[in-house]
Image (cartoon, rainbow, N blue to C red; front, side):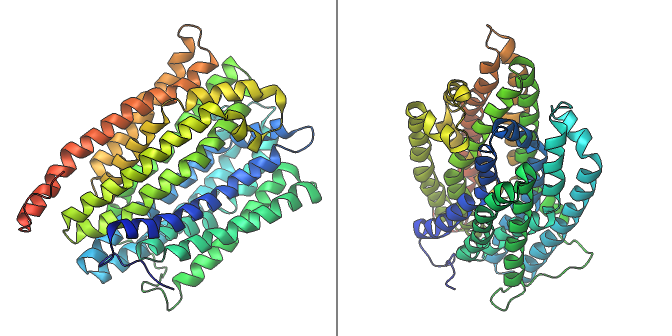
Length: 457
């Protein structure tokens, strides 16, 4: 299969060749959870309750994603930099360590989740009424943690080698399986919410099998092996702390939202938040594909000391991300019901969900600045800044605002949804501005050192 040529290819072409398969992969990856919610929302008589039950599991699912990103997205930029420097031996060590860390972390998560699942759900805002349904879904879902973390985490290394289509296929297999299996287990077998979890675990296993087959094949230049040794583990975890924090703080935000919405609006508003979060997951996917698709290009060229190409990659990333987020904002403002109908046909929550979407996406365009700035910091191994801005937007701003705004001027539940746009504006502008003020001068100095002169804007 043809690889993306990071060494000689054009920047725009490389980004598109990496980002487009990644976009398809991420859209399909959404089907693991989104298809569950679509079908669950249509279970006769209990769809809205089922959505709320699954929504209460989101913080734990997000934490799983956080650890996956820590070792996947945390190690793959380091892997790409070593490829750019021509050190394939060190690149192989980084990949193998990431693989081992993913397996170990998944085993620990399964153990902790199965033992303390009920207590965690109560901590995250569930009441005794929601516990039976939420816990039954969670305990089944956790069984697929190793499959999910390895298949998703190792995809970053497959993409970093230039095999972006292989990464796409690995996700496609599981996502299409989930699309087929969900209605069978939910409706045909009458398993309801539990059936959605069973279908997801089976689908994750199929993706895992494909990824492992490729990683052990001759086509892969860096076969994985499991040995209880972790060279470069600290470096991987250090850079991976930023994407982990992004997911972990998403979990904190979800907990805060569930708690405040239960207090001000009841269980129905947890269902509304589940719909809003699901729409956000869908609409975030293209801009995340662009930024993550740009990461290996940034890392490779930074490792190869090519500052002009790093700058061009940032420009191309922004030219793709900003217009997209503007288009999303327009669609949400004009046609919110389109997105709500994907997840629920319950007319009683349409007005509340439409208003919530309008408030939540009020400043979505600034999200492109946050993602782009974070991507550059992570891709160039600027872990301190990447971690700071991960914490700044969510922990310093969103969580306090979620608890504070509902008490101001009678905002109530509206205040929960307004916390997001306020943080988008302040956090996005701050992150992108600091990136320009710190990274651009460094790239200019690198260009001068290379004898290229100042590479300009």
